[in-house]
Length: 331
Ligand code: NAD
Image (cartoon, rainbow, N blue to C red; front, top):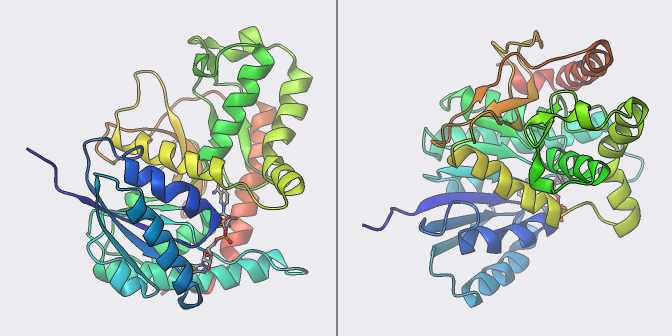
C-alpha cells in the first residue's frame, strides 16, 4: 500500500539553500524513496516570481514522489496541515548591522511563523530552524507555538557536526564513515564546541588515535568554529549546498533509528537536560532517535576542564542572545 504524502514546508524558498534542498526532498533523499511528499514553499511577496520559477523547475524534474507544490508568502496558508517545517528564510546581516539588531529583526519573523505553526500546522509537526541566529530564532518560534510540544523543535548544528567529522577523518587519515559520535555542544556560532573527547574512530576513542592535543584544542576547534566565515571569504556567499545536505542528514537522523552506540547533534530544548545546562535555551546536545521523529538526549558523555570552559562560553552567549529577545518569548 502506498504511503500518505508528508507535507514539508521550506521557508526562504527563493534562496540559495532552498535551491539545493528542494530537489533532493522531491527525489526522496530526505524522507525515503517510498515516501510521497507535498512541498509548501514560502518566501516574501517580493520573491513571488522567483518562487514561480522554482516551482516550474520542480515540475520539470518530473519527480514521481512529488505530489503537489504549494507556493506563497502567507505563513498562515503555507503552514496549513504540515508535518515538517524547515525554517530557512531569514534576513541576512546587513552592512554595519549589530548582532542585536539582527536578532531583533529576525525575531519578528519567528514570532509570526511560531504563531502560524501554532494555528495551522499539525500538532505533531517537527520544526527545524536553519535561519540564523538559528538557536535563538528556534527559541522564539517554540515559545510562540505553545500548542506544539517543545520536543518538536530543533535548530541545526548538523553542518558543524559534518564539518568536524570530515576534519577528524582527514587528520587521522581514515574513511569518513570510520569517524562517529562527533558532538557539537551549544550555539551554532563561533562559540560552538566541537567535541573530540567523546568522538570515536572505528568504535575506539578518537583520542587513542589522534593524540595531538594542541591540534585538537586549538587548530581543530577554531577550524570548525570559523568554517562558516571561511566559506563566505572564499565563495563570497554563505554555505548553501553543504547546508542543504546537512538539513537532509538532520531530518534523516530523526526519521531513521540511530545506529546502536552512536548519536547525532541537534540543538534542542534544554529543560531537564543531564549536563547542567541552564533551562530555556535551545542548546546543541548529543541525541538519539528511535526513527519515529522523536529524540532523547544521550547521557554520561565525558568532559574535561578545557571542554567545560568552552561550553560555559557558549552557554553565556546563548543567555545573552535570549536576553535581547526577552520580549519575543514572554507572554
Ligand atoms: P538567501 O539570502 O539565499 O535566502 C534567504 C531567503 O529567505 C530569501 O529568498 C529571502 O527572501 C527569504 N526570506 C527572508 N525573510 C523571509 C520571511 N519572513 N519569510 C520567508 N522567507 C523569507 O540565504 P541562504 O543562503 O539560503 O541562507 C538562509 C539562512 O540560513 C541564513 O540565515 C543563513 O545564515 C542560514 N544558514 C544556517 C546554517 C546552519 O548551519 N544553521 C548554515 C548555512 C546558512
